[in-house]
Image (cartoon, rainbow, N blue to C red):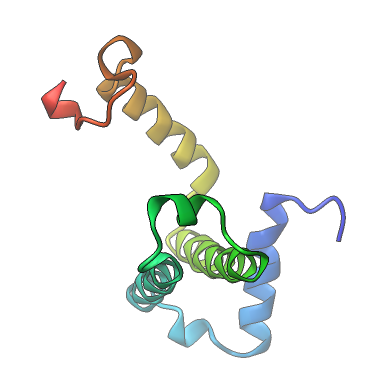
Length: 117
């Protein structure tokens, strides 16, 4: 599949859910819970790995991680759509807010939280 755009994902996902009559089950609460469950499945892929191992995944593990990330993205996109949230513009806004909380001159080179800068 070439020329895939993020914008097309929301409509394709909505069509997928509608064809299966899943809209009644896709409440924000249920989607948020499913999103959390999928995040747990992603964590499972890294459980017991060393820091080094987590940066050099086997092809099999990398594929499993990619599929878990896709599950997370799908639930996130569906949840945002159900709540009428423009996820891309909101993500850009959040980066701007984080830039204010974490100015380069104070946060460069360490992982302290904004209230510890």
